[in-house]
Figure 1: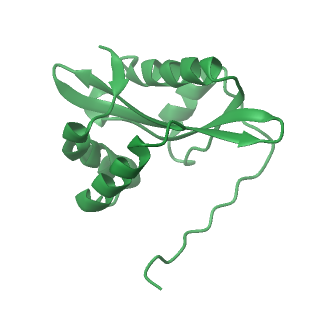
Figure 2: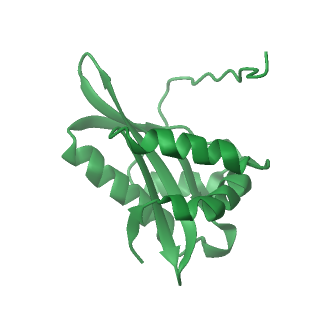
Figure 3: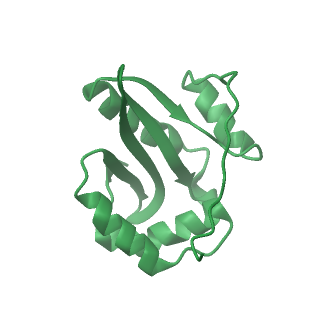
Length: 144
């Protein structure tokens, strides 16, 4: 098993993984449009991992910059439910950590839904700590 860049051919399987992660149907055309856009931006890392020829996990890393330097935001960490507890999430996280280190990031941050307790255990074993800051999120109505 090797972590690799996601390609356009992976998008149908990726849509299935994202549907499992978000608990809502993912529109394939939106995923394809966004994927095409982000392919041209070196700050976006869309990685996946295969098991027996099937895409079973994915992670998105975004290199951001502030006045103190670079940092990485990790989003959409998913390993399909049938493939969890085999170290695949760890491999995905280690891959983005290596890239963050290579690109000079001084920290990595992520948020995780309160209900994703298995993921929280993984993050803890990798050295991630619950930060005493409070995150806020506002969903925007894109149809207005």
